[in-house]
Image 1 (cartoon, rainbow, N blue to C red):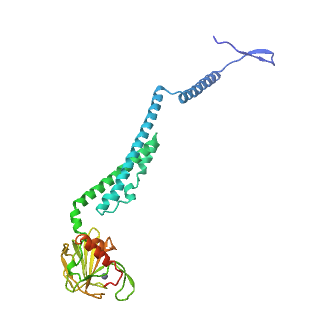
Image 2: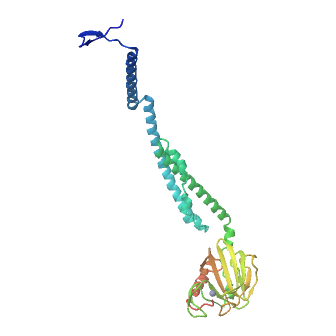
Image 3: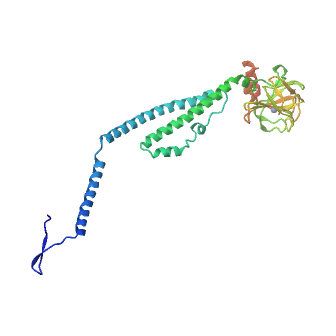
Length: 322
Ligand SMILES: [Zn+2]
């Protein structure tokens, strides 16, 4: 049986019994229950945040190990990158030079490591930084490897076509040595034969009697024939691989545009048409749109002694025939 409770009433000077209502009891129960739950939560969170379970400890160790492994992977990747750079340099500075292919620009080699969305996805994960940089390095290396292997494919093709390519490089004189009356002026700054002022001579002049055969200096396709201001009757041959040769002042043209030509084919006869002061061939070699010194393109038909003689004569700073 529940104990009865009393309180002293000073006005009546007597003890009066306290009557508890059901609402009072309910309130009491609720207060105790709520404070119990509240304290329970506090203890639970303190426990969870400070004390690790064996599983959590294991996970923590795994994470440390994984990070260490990623760092090892990264170091290996850096070593591979170093080897890759060496391959790229040898490719650009040696192999591609041998086959006269342009070096591959750094922008193409490195590429835009553009797929940032992919990396951002990784960022949301734990361990993100080390995983992200490893993934990024791997992707870059993958792309560089691909470009490098493409470059080797191209070089293999060039090597297979090397024979054909050599046939297309200007490599002889346009007039036979025996037909030359004398070597005229070479490439460089010379005195203009008409205006007697210094002017850049973009080709080499070979003097020979009118009607002497003029030879194509390499395989190719006739690009243009006909009269050209200054050059007179003129033939231009496109040899591919960036090479073009030009022959001026002809008395007769023996080819037509579009015609396939082999090295040594007669393309015209020596004359003195256009701006010219005597029978000669004006011969130019262009490589990728830039005019070159033709004296570097006679390696097939000149002995070392002949070559020296030609260089000496063509380097004279005297008059040219234009
Ligand atoms: Zn000339």
